[in-house]
View (cartoon, rainbow, N blue to C red):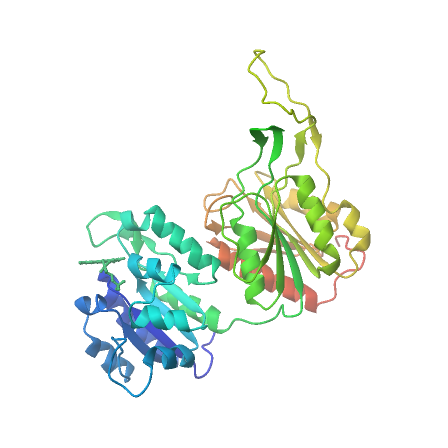
Amino acid sequence: MESFPHDKHVLLGVTGSIAAYKSVLILRRLMEAGARVTVVMTSSAQQFIAPLTFQVLSRRPVYTSLFDPSDEIRHLTLAEQVDLILIAPATANIIGKIANGIADDLLTTLVTASRAPMVMAPAMDGDMWNYPVLQRNLSVLDGLGVHIVPPEEGLLASGKEGVGRLAPEEKILSAVLSRLNRREDLAGETVLVTAGPTQEPLDPVRYLTNRSSGKMGYALARAARGRGARVILVSGPTHLPCPANVERALVQTAAEMRDAVHRYFPETTLLIMAAAVADYRPRLRSEQKLKKEASTLFLELEPTPDILADLRSERGDRIMVGFAAETGNLLKRARAKLEQKGLDLIVANDVTQEGAGFDLDTNIVTLMNARGETTALPKLSKAETAERILDEIVKLKAGSRPKDRTLR
Ligand SMILES: Cc1cc2nc3c(=O)[nH]c(=O)nc-3n(C[C@H](O)[C@H](O)[C@H](O)COP(=O)(O)O)c2cc1C
């Protein structure tokens, strides 16, 4: 694990989950790592564990009330003093309140007042975890840059098996560390990220598309923003909220995506093409809805415009990164695409592998650079995969890139 930065003040928010006792272990681990930790408990959390436990172990007062008689405005002083807010475990309730800007107790009020990075580790029953409103709230928080450490599958307090167990301490600690150690190593860069699928209309109600959810591209946009870059996200149709402080241009077709990329290209210093752009589109688009007349309908398809084709001559020293989603012969195909498109780096994934590909929260990718060097990453969350891709890009920027961009 990375080393813990010196003299960091972590606010540990404990909420009313049966997993609240695990916060004691998290507190201990944070303190062993050298952090100063102030614990804030909701009133439900105190039904599960006493403030005294945290007070003794943290050797600091534990705060439980917004209206404690004191000579300071506690929620404002705490909000200002801390380097990071960790809420572990985070109940469905606290997630809903924070996602919606509700500030009705000490923890939610200080979150509203603080600009410190936030990590949340939800824990709850499987049915609560699958509740669509909870998932929508998590997407909102994710879009705002909150690092969510997802719960794991296993035996739950109800006695049922399901997803909802608080993530292991190790994972929570490592999320805290990566937020505290976050580098601003893309400051000054303008990163253009393409994301999501394209839709190629057939008639006014039908289109050809693919299974891309946009999650990988959005994770890259968010991660690049977190590292200090200006980020422009050219996105095909997706339900994902725009990440905070990212400029987004929504497009539908490959042709529109090409136009948007061309429009922003002059200001771009780093281009990451994570979108799953259609290779073909219907040659003719019917103005009227196609009727069910013949027993067989033949569709004539034509290639969509190649987004990169005319940009290669204007690229200068821009770094260009592409994706290859394949279903076989992964490295060979990725290498061919890297070479053919003149990319600096290609992110290859075999979408048939379990835990990789479209519409999942995890991915398994192999990075291949223009020197033919490959790095196979393990199964990681898309947020973590995005960070690792950016690490590789930062390395490429620092090193000398081969001028002819051909494989050696
Ligand atoms: C025995 C018991 C266990 C609970 N465990 C959880 C849990 O793990 N996760 C959760 O979201 N809510 C859980 N709840 C419900 C919360 O305590 C409840 O929604 C409460 O309002 C949360 O308040 P808080 O978010 O302010 O701490 C549990 C309730 C009980 C009675």
